[in-house]
Length: 401
Image 1: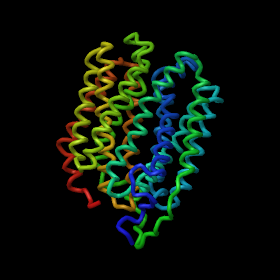
Image 2: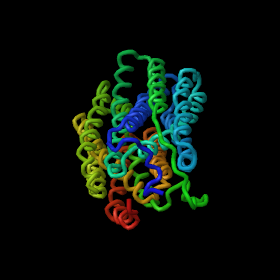
Image 3: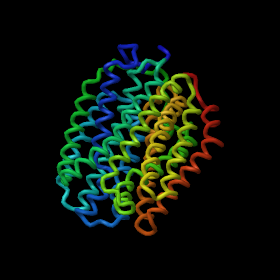
Image 4: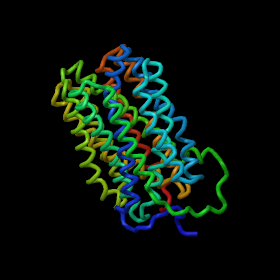
């Protein structure tokens, strides 16, 4: 058997057709989902007159569902036909957007949002694993970085587009339809990916906890959850904060555009560092830049700080996330690629879910300032943990690739 039995690609180039299809599907997956993210608190407030703590509860439902399904997704992707798993889950992901259109009560909306987390959690695992399969092994680290750029750019650009569409149309139903159509396009993209049959593993490991969660990466998972918490607070409450506290009615789109600029610039600069193996250094730069951004956002309640922090957070996450993903992959065996993907996404979603819930309660019962200062403190704790322990933890457990 070859060194890596799952390298089912027909091209040795980085930018092969199947990799581009996986990237396109990933971009459209996240774009359709995050097109709605910053506007859903406004929608729930305007449509159902929901309090902010209830908004946080409703919006965290998809995170809980994704958390439930992701560990099993990693096992399923590593065990069964990845293409069939990917296409089936993506179909349910796109069709559930119709539920937002028909939800007439806050309870129905909460049910749809929670159900949406199930295919979302499974698709993100399956698609990223397929993308790794179609990459040449010698360029996998670099390819992981570029692949992550597709969802980071979508998470940055989509809110900008969504906010602009809402500002000119004042129509949430239009946004739900656009999201549905974009998700359908993503479904088509991944359905055209061609994968060669995988070679069956000899002496296949028995089912154990490590088949559902990458226990070798437990400290990295804790560290990433702290960073995900910060993103959960920021991404879900920045729009309503800018509108209510800073009087910025049309500036949230600019915030996410600047965030996307930072993500794009850092991913391009960091790709070479990942290719050359400077993984820890790339991650360290990212967590420090993010800390500066979150601290500035909390400390200075001025429009210039609001926008500058977007650039810093974008630069930071653009360095940190692909480096962390590479770290997870490099402490996993080759037959645990799906588990590594599900583990990093599970870790991120745990933090995201806690951030959404915590942010909603702090905003409702204390203040926006308390919510964003808590975010800065959590980022500082995550940064300290990385420098003191996580970096050495990774280096001691890294496997030969």
